[in-house]
Image (cartoon, rainbow, N blue to C red; front, side, top):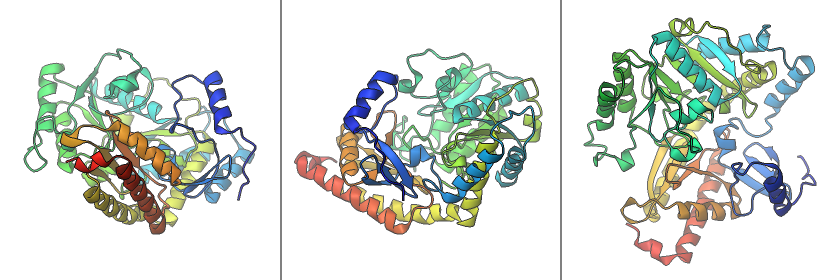
Length: 442
């Protein structure tokens, strides 16, 4: 076990952050945590306090912190070869590309490697435009695609656009946010009005031919909004009707997170293009875009990602995939996800400020509300502070800032899930004791 370092206390660290980092490098909690080391599903701060990590570096630490098998693969590769660029071939890059072709759904086969999800999504849009000859791209409201100019334009949340007007050629369409249906319908009566509106948008707000649509099977930063399978099926049908491709953004949902290898597999849709990052390499920077041969073969103009296919990142990814297969972590995500979901739904019955529970596998969201579904971001802030005090780390998100995001490493055990549920229950109970008026939320 690593020993705590002599890192400055939180107050000193916050002073240094203000002095040397840009102000949009935000941190959770009134008093930020200075992390020192991790082990499996646990993180330890600079003072040695242990936390149960149920956010995994924003769904990135997929097989646990400091996994010895992944770390050894990285160490071995560092001693052998660190970087040469894609002007030369390396075995780790070729092996990872071959591995992705074998495990991804449908006819996806050819990959282009980058260093982040932003770059992966940029590449996917470029592929769709070159393959179809069309320029306009559909993106979903409440989505998040990254931090470049194009990726921020694809993002369906104004707060993540940094006040920029965006780049041309992107059209936002209706997503399936069933808890807050913009048509005032319930899931059993909506008739997929949101999907029908997508076709109407193509016919009225585009040239009538589109390059494609980019969709997260579960919207991550959007607050784990989980559309019905039928919506994604209809979305793919509609965009293909108008000459476009279906791009599945699996940056957060990929590699077992939802209880299937890829999030889109729940809907049975075979993408034309798929993007990855985050959990693919357990925290080592990586991005990847894979496409069918007929799409990928149009992507032939000169381009390069300097660190794309880096042998160290590729070895980390291969080792991560090995661990997932050897430990059957996709199945573990499904099983522990069912247990987690049942526990969250029990909490919802007792605490009415939990307006919605949604997600799949080990990707579960809690939407905090007051009466009449009024978003309650202040309650999320209090909940995070109280769960921190309980030694539990979770995330938050959503357009209204009122959704808690729960996503532990895929190695999580039943007892750790129970520990997290117990910590959340204690936090909620304390909130109700401190604010008796919460008992009247309906």
